[in-house]
Image (cartoon, rainbow over the protein chains, first blue to last red):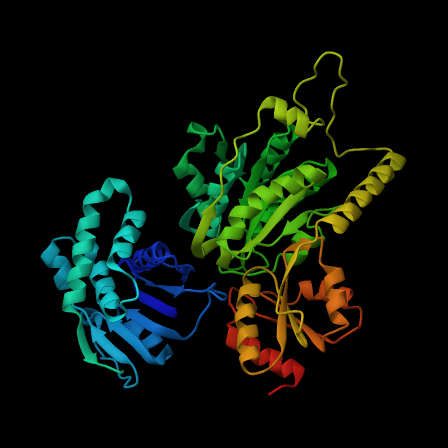
Length: 184
Length: 360
């Protein structure tokens, strides 16, 4: 099992921390992971992305250019990464920032209205976990108990109440994910 | 069971320093290694192990604080990135000249000059060949993962004290920023005063009655004395070359073609080797872990068996010079590199490899 994932959006949307929680959850399941952010002269409001690789074997290159899954949170990122998803791969996106819908016909495409989920829970910070929930529903390799342990490892203990809210967002994200086209 | 934590290479350096009984860290922030000091400041080791963490006013200050701490036999270190290492180079030469142990971390970025902040391996020549003035070598070790970053701090101090010589951990922006699982081995306490006296009898810790005073200096005005000292250094470097070479081979034993790469480039090359093997091309990879001392014997041994070697680096071709010297004409040696903070992909390496070897 090897899953190569890109998570991309605006800085501040929780792209890097979503990747971190995903990576930590995989560690809790005794898998190998790499988490490699795009880093450069980035600025607030600019684009941010991170590549996460999860594998049951040792991972060689942390640098990848083709992805099994792309989790996309804005139009710039969709334009940049839609073409790099492997045939048969998965695209999860939040339609709120999207003006041009995905065009690929050889991948599974699904959407998640994560802003709604965050609004229902009453905390904008859990937005990214709703998106993560949508992904976890589509690729159920990680057990929920390990995801919760991943959350506990990633969130400082002084924000313990956030663990429950994040968990709720993940579960709602799993319920709300919409499959737009599916490749089996 | 050892604890496994997801951390960046830079964070691993800081956590390892605290857990391995380092006495002092002196540094000045610079991307892409600022998390080293940020992590130390967050962890506040001065409240637990008593480790000193100090943000100096410049790289010049930090390296000279390292000199001062090292004179006292303390385990002291600094970290920086390329332009900062240039600023430290005078101090590194003095540390080598005074035979002082210390660990210096260089998380390389693109150069020359201020360059970029993205990853690069373009300080190979600077760190391996000198950087500062005079006849000296730093021991240079090249991590390829956050786990290596963690492990190499302790290994670095072991080598530094064994040979009374500065050790450089030569990392790059990828290894600094990359997060992976890191196993935390059982921690070591800081040395007591008695342990320092035993490990570093040369240290300047105050003159006890009945004992000659220790003098630490890199100055000798007499040409004869200086030459004798240079010869002594040479003997030390020969000993290091004989005892401390470390490398890792990946599918080298049945390889017909060899890639040579260190640090992050070796990880990308490993993926390229796998892809080449899938196509039936017998490629292998040699990763030098110590860059000084360089694994020249192993490269020479493999050179008589393979059809070609290719050095893959994030620079214009620096380590390839050492590969050529070790190969000494036994097989063709090629090079491929990217610069400016751009990073090659496994596919790109595979393509360049085929071009060089006239393979389809």
